[in-house]
Image (cartoon, rainbow, N blue to C red; front, top):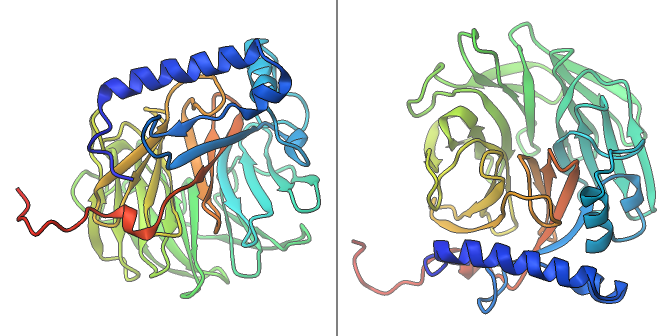
Length: 363
């Protein structure tokens, strides 16, 4: 999954290839249209990420939407209908990978796609929902900015708790450390906020502390943080959006390292939002500004990117949240395209995340 041979010229070529494939599919039979799939990096390189489908709403439960379905929806200028996504923000996936939870800011709801039972449902009348997360019991945590807190629902859809604190200003992203009974609430704050922080609660709702040394650009400081993720060791990854980086902290809140910086090159960001990890521990960052997802290994080395700005299936417009299940299915919030884009990590082992040892000293 190395990117060193993945040149800038390949980006333009790949987008042209992708567009031609889709247009060719429109002139072919429905069967051939369903077979057209994008992958990254582009041929003839080994595919690592494959585009699976676009999820627009309840119609996605029980069948796969084809390229032709997706393309017709957008090129035809259709507006989202009832039961369809409008502004997807936060994403969570059940432990068995059969349920997908998506918060919709505009619809004041969380959509629940139960692919196992082919059912669709929703939790309505929420107050500006953004981040979502699941604990070990599959209870659903929803950050409600309008209530300045986190609502908790059991698997049956009954509200069982509300977590807040007077210090919370604008809760956005959520992440749960199940082993340590911790809930991380990213408090994005406002322009006039004195500090942009990440609040730490236990799962019963007691405030334990916070991460953040103040408002600013130094290590350990934040400027409008948005989303978070926790790895198997309890390390926390926080998208520091207006500082164009992702910061990593240990379970005690100690700053460890940063991924990325502002720019338009490999491993650089514009406005990073959602962050997640695959089963190999690689870090995926959805960038709203560049409308792509970049993949880093644990050393902070850039491995690959996928997506790119556009309306065609597999491309993104202002990516938001991201979630990855235990089978390495990747779900990305596609804000302006009103959908969730599903991808899959393929042809990859743990060894592919790191450079092979050559015995040579690094330059």
